[in-house]
Image (cartoon, rainbow, N blue to C red; front, side, top):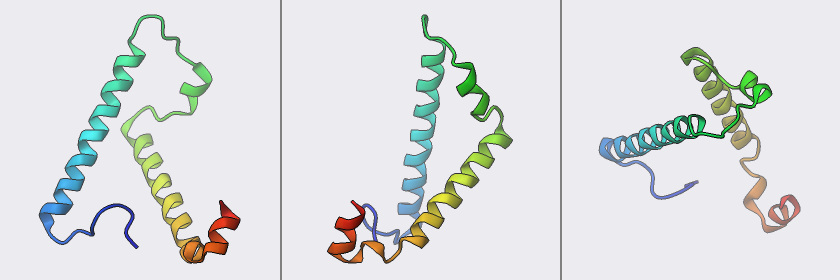
Length: 90
């Protein structure tokens, strides 16, 4: 099953995808930094309390996100194979 585009056939294609992800990561962090330092933007203390603060916490968030995404994909592997199942879920 292909999500978007073709499967990796060379190391170069894999490296390109990793590079695109890295650029996206940097852009998201740059926008977050610019937004949080913008004048008039208030900090939401309850939300900040649950967000990761250091590298270790971010790595845990990444691991949990990967585990949840993988588990959901494995659990629903055959669910969307027929049109009746697709319409029942959607």
